[in-house]
Length: 494
Image 1: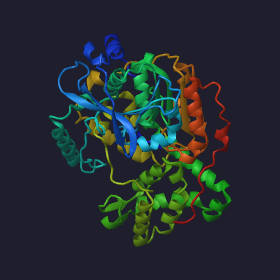
Image 2: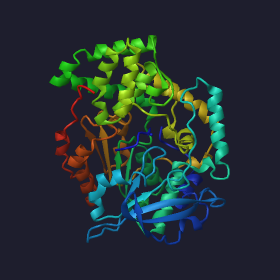
Image 3: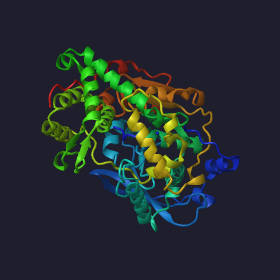
Image 4: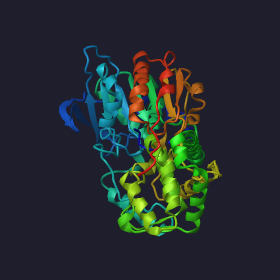
């Protein structure tokens, strides 16, 4: 359901003058940025759905309000019922790099019931979709060829000249766009809804514009003041352990894979010692790859992001273990898993991810602060941290454009829902939220992951969010349904 963040310390300390600038005028400099003209919505069709659309031109540099102006794409689904509430639901997409408009079909299937009384508002974040979308070929995912990584990043930056200045493609600048759009549409207070990186972006908006937020729903997110990427190994290992434990307690899974832990250990050691070369025709990237322990770690972590895909982990481990001494059979399994969507395709790094990951405190990945040294995913996380450390030396620093002020006490009602088997944003990542939002509540979904099963969501989560938004309070929610949400069965064969 949510784009991995891939996603999300989230505390930005700025001088008082800048913090006041950000809160008061979205760092637009002049009142003209804040006082937007009315935005006229026109009938449109978005991915086959009837809606109302508009484009608002905003300053790329919201610090001064001068220079290039960029389009911000807006799609609104007006409330369908006769009793319309004045406060809409505003969706924040995941990523960074996800398009809110592109996510409309999925989000409507999850939040459609809220559209009876409230407008549903989708705003493409600057640098994505129809809001001056930025794209570049992905650089190599490792530093094995560091000069090629440098050339790729430099080529990307050169291709953006005349179209975008990456220094201004930050969460804070995007929050200013959202505030300007909402003012232009005539909305007062709104209900924020965000998952994964969208949960981070929603928190940034709430910090900058606290008076405009009626409620905030955060799914699969992490508190801005808490480490995220540094905890990946620990969270991913815990998620994997839960899958192993659930398989051991499931008669069919345990019967099919009685030595799952031993096979996992043997497979990891084998691929670390004897990697298997997979030809281009059978690889998920379309190029020849070397299947080693690092690829195995990435593949398993990828599966754990979705509760449905995580059910394949025992079968994956057993199949690869069985085929480990037969390169042809091993390569065939890679193709089979790719066909099932169980291995990630070519690495894709959204362009706006560069200034966000390199400059915003919550998104940094520091090798010395990575936890979970005994985790299977620790080496891959350290490798990723070193990659980002190098790449960030090539990205122009946003400076003040990345600031959104310190996290402060707020009475805003907040509902947080995190899966206990989330390998990236487990419930522990929201620890301390009540110290910031006294009117908040954290719900832990047993066995659910970063991406929740849609049937489970419609069975329980959708009603909880609807009740929360309707009453602007999480205190009276009946959460008994969480204990009865069924998890997907373990596949025993391909």
